[in-house]
Length: 429
Image 1: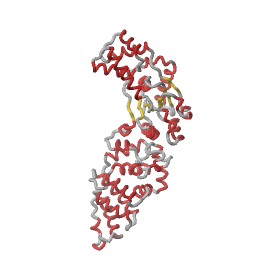
Image 2: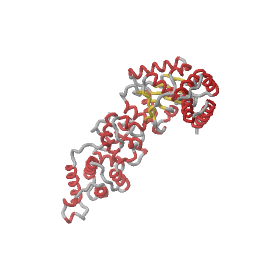
Image 3: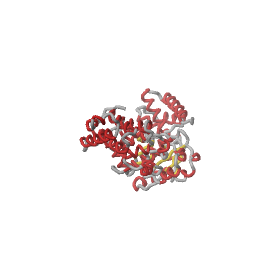
Image 4: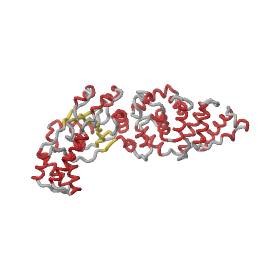
């Protein structure tokens, strides 16, 4: 359980927790003995025996525990007023953006959950209290934060601040045993890295879309619905109404994600794709919505909309869709597999198809020039006729062809190889 303290603020925080725990534990109880042993091994250097009479040092009684408590208070006075460390600065940044309040009860609980999960001494005492003193999680939280258990139940409940902001699963208090296991490991890792803004903390949950290989004119074949979607999205990012949802669907390999990138580029928006396992998609969306609320010209992309009706807490998930602060694009192959209640929340549906042969020939021409291959019109028309390829597949093929110094015939082989790989990737199971 031993660990060298990394900074003065960590020491200050551990002493505060030790002081709260010492007040809660009976002097002769197993929890008090665990606390005293933890303080030694955590590197707190409490010379608490010096405050007692010689006959009290081995008694394990009230005098010993009172001496321990006095030593804690003396050590706390010696390290008061220290500056927050990087971890605490990141926690405060996250709490501020999620509207938890820097010193409010939910923020206090968040700080403890983070530090108990990433900090050796706190994690050690929590595990020891759980396994050796048989102290339930809420009792531990109450002892360490000074908050009553009913208040903690509200904070951690399905409508509590930490759940509704995506920091905990809706059933987190039931599904997990210890307080060290409540937070997403991605969030814990992000909070330990240097962060200058909220996007640094949210980085594990977001994929920034790169430049699109397509141009907006490449999708003229989709008809008026694409232009309506562009006007709707442009107005939404300018006026910021809540709850705007676009559904983009189509067969595998037609380039749905590329269309979304091109649409966002066309209206001057930043596209951020959620990156999360399906089981945590609801939590991730809550966290991202809260964390990015107020960001200008931002569009959220959810790549697999077929799963949204399967999130835990269907009513809460529907509220997230209906009240999202940023326009959100939901992508799936077939809207028919979506939950009907969620499908009804979509404002517009756009079916993406492969560009026709003439348009594809223009894409081959443009991108081959960008790749330095300089294919002529006849070659590009031949490639377009030989392969029904999306703009992304064309771009990838030409990139590899440029590296391999391939001929036009070899480019076709490369493209067909990539097509097989993508077909395998998009095959369920």
